[in-house]
Length: 178
Image (cartoon, rainbow, N blue to C red; front, side, top):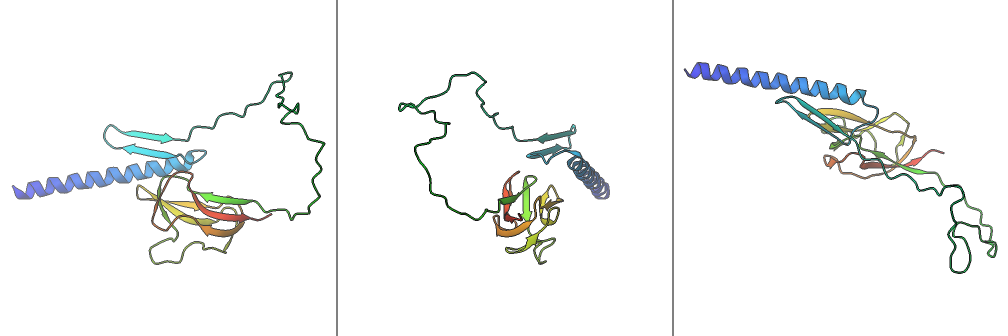
């Protein structure tokens, strides 16, 4: 009797393992086919359910229609009009290079290295190029590469290795090449 119970438990474990493997493969295929990474991904094995969630778009910019009345301050100036009674001294400034961030493409666990004990993909001061892998996000036993969208120099690592991250969370600050 005990042999049958052990055999049944073993078969159930194998079925569960095959189901999990199939779900991981499906999730990987779905994530590769979507136009941009979702904020969240939920899978369910019982009665099969797959949900992807993207952040809500922000409110559209408010633009006054042509011919709309203009705002005027109490002193008679329009807030958007150029003021001609003040002349700023000319100051030469070096053009600033835009700072950007490399953000998490999904919810998961952030890893800086390809495996425990290995050197990190990048460190502060490293120069990166667009498309270069800079980290990994683990989600449901899937290792999703994080790639830089811009070239530049890593100025800081914003998340400790092994910490949970949210979709869109900044991972690295980058001083973008001009």
